[in-house]
Image 1 (cartoon, each protein chain N blue to C red):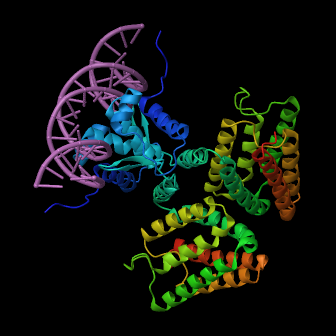
Image 2 (image 1 turned 60 degrees about the horizontal axis):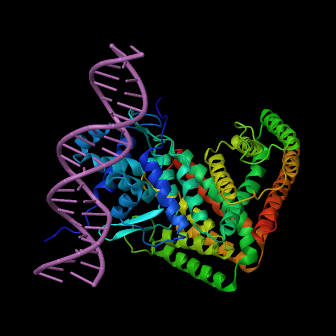
Image 3 (image 1 turned 60 degrees about the vertical axis):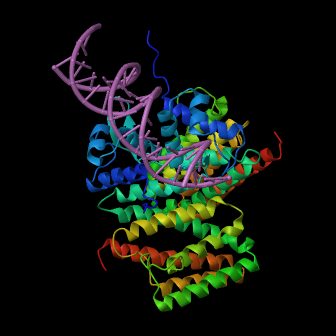
Length: 247
Length: 247
DNA sequence: GTTGATTTGTCCGTATGTATG
DNA sequence: ACATACATACGGACAAATCAA
C-alpha cells in the first residue's frame, strides 16, 4: 500500500506561492513573506522553499534581493528571451535557420501591426519617431555601429530598438512591444555572439525607417506596410548572405 | 578594499551548465552530469547545484527525472505560457484586457501567415485539415464542448487546437506553431479558470474553419486571409460581450 | 562609521523516495 | 526481493548583503 506519484514538494510550493500572490491581489513590487515565514506557513524546509522561489525567479514571477527580501516580479518576457537564445545557440550548426524563424515572426507581426498603427499613432508620437530617425542618420554618419561600441545607451542598435518600441506604443497593447523587444534581443545576442551582424548598413536602415515615418505621417496604411516589408526584405537578404558564408 | 558585487553562485552555475551543453553540443534528451558530478566539477555544494538546476528546469532548458538523472530539456515555450498566465491572472480585475492583447497578437500572426500558407500547403495537408473540420462538425452536433468534458483528448477544443497546428506546419517554421499553441493555451487556461469560455458556438467555429480550408483549397490567399479575419472577429466579439458582463 | 537585526546565500550531513537492473 | 544510482527533502550552521539605529 504505497501512495503513488504525490506531487513533488517544490512544485506544490511554487503553486502555493503563486496562489498567495493571486489571493492577496499583490502587484509587481509588493513584498512577499520571508523564507522563514514561508517555511512556517507551508510546513516545509528552507531548501524546498528556496528551490521553489528560484524556479519562480527564473520565470520573473518573483524577485529575490539578497539580504533584503522577496518581492512580486514583473512577469516580463525575460524567460522567453533566455529560452529562445538557448534554443538558437543549441542548434550549433545552423543557428541561422532558427534566427530566420524568429525574423519571420517579427516580420509578420510588424507588417501586420503597422497598418493599425497608421490609424492610432498621434502627431506627437510621429515627432518622436522623426527625432529618433534623425539621430539614427547622424549616428550612421559617424560610424557608431554595432553592439561592441562602448557608448552608454546611444548606439545605433539602441536607436533602432527605440524606434520600433515607440512605433507600437500607440496600440495600447503592452504585450506587443515586449514581444518584439524580446525577439529583437534574441536576434542581437545570437548575432553578436557568433561573428558579424546580420544587418544592413546603418545608412540603409535609417533610410528605411524614414520611409516608414513618411508613410505614417501621410496616414498611408498600405505605404507604411510596404515600407516595413521592404525593411525586412533587406534584413533577410543580409541574413541569407551570412548563412552562405559571404562576408 | 572590498571586492564589489561578485556574481552569485547560483547564477554562475546556471551559465556554466548552459555553456556545458553548448560546448559539448548536446541536444534535447542528452544526459547531463549528475548533481554529485556537477558539485565536484564546479566545486560547489549540492544546494547551489540544485537551485541552479531548478531555475533551468523552470525555463525547460534542463529536465530533471526523479531517481533517474538530469537531461537536456526541449526549451519549449512552457515558460512563456506560465508567465503569460500569471501575468493575466495577476491583473485581478480586468484580465479581459490582457486576454484581448494576447488575442490581437494571435490574430495578426494568423492573418498574416495564412497568406503564406496558401502558397506552401500541400494537398495532403489540406485533406488532413478537412478531416479535422469534419470531426469538429460532428463534435459540434453532440455538444462535446468545453475544457471540462472529461473526454480523453477528443474534445472540440482539442480539435480547434489541432486545426491551427496542422495549418501552420507547412511553413517549415517550428517557432510559429509553438508560439500560437502557447497563446492558445494561455487563453484556454485563463478563460476556463474564471467562468464561461470566450468562444463562439462550436457550430460557428466549425463553419469558419471550413471556409478557411475552402479558400486554401482554391489557393485563394486573399479569401483565406478574409476568412481567418472573420474567424477572429467572432472571437473578439464574444470576448467583448463577456467583459461587459453579458452572459 | 560602527553596530546590530533581518534576510537571503551557501555549505554540510543525513535520511528518504524513486527508477533501473 | 535485492542492490545500486540518483534525485528529494530535512535540519543546522555560518557567510554575505542590506537597512536602520
